[in-house]
Image (cartoon, rainbow over all chains, first blue to last red):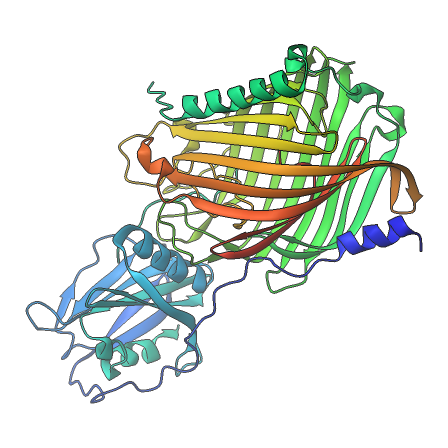
Length: 186
Length: 399
């Protein structure tokens, strides 16, 4: 092999230095969560629908705990839940997403970091008790904790569940995990 | 859910306040004039061409089977090829077929046919076609404060471009009009991918007062590009933007670039490059309008983008003349030289055209190796920044 051929081959062989997704710290099943399990007596179901209105999935929540509900403010929202405290200690909002579950969650997180100075703490793929894949991103700004949970349910449509609270423990609470674990395909 | 700013996928495809830019322009011109005065005859301010591009050797080609890394895109295995003056027709061709071998899952087919003669020596035509499948492509949010947090994309898109080019005075003046068509996807305000097809148009002006079109060693270049209102229907297809996707026709994007080539010795040369881009129109919107992205080699492609941007680079080049006729299965042509380069880049983006463009600038630095054929430059650059190391394997000089 001549010198120039060797040179050409040497030039061509490169180490992989392409961009890689940053290391993620979240993984595994949600589990039951911390604290007392939801006991009702009122459990309410939210339908996750396509724009046409056809149902692709459902999500349950404890209406005794999340006693305050705000109707959807936009067509892509399914609703906002809050506890009865003034101001609420936890707010959960559900909106429609399309496509893979990690893109809108990471997109939303990047926008919050860029525009509202949130710090992105960790992210990763999760799974609920129905074996539904979720993507989760945790953010923080001062004392405010915000987590995004995105799942695709059917026909490329799903939901992003945003949980906002002043307490990191509430993100992992049994009430939140109940919502996540009852998210299911229709 | 927090409403988010509208974005553009980033395919690149009244008040002109240039503030510090004239200073940079004068500095660059001054450096060139100094070099011309000290090292060369002032008549070299318009250097003689070392050779005529039209007289390049026929059938020079390079086929590069490579494992290559393009920042922000991924690691490919495939073939990158370039051919010049094929069949002595004057036509150049570049083609790439590649598949990713890391977890980015990318499939690329690209062909570019250039220098199709319409009026010999004056008017040529260029056509590009690309098909890209992005299984796990990582992109960044536009904006000055874009976090170092990638957004994965799964989509397929096609890209086409048709470009007539008018040239005068031994290619020292070039004018071109580009018609482009993108058929693929974009993001809505919630980050969902939606189907999108879009026609685009732009115009280019190039003033090339250097000694060579392919690998300049002395002289000065000025390049201006502006987007133009695009027809909604062309030979490629019709524009079809779903609701919630921003209409690009309300925005005019302008790019200015100046490059000075200063010979220090027969082998050492210094290259200074500066760029400025701005997106005009749709003022008052809260969205991030991506006018462009500074080509910082230490960052992934498109890492930083916003309405305004500046870029500067200094590159020291050392060229060893070889003049070796290469004739192997993968390459045919005259290797004129081997070039080693050290460089540093800096750049910044901002939503406003003010002093913030020159604050907290992003820096990268690195080294490069180039193989100089008569009409083709094979370039390998490694660059480092605060976000890591990037490699570039491509066929052209950076500027």
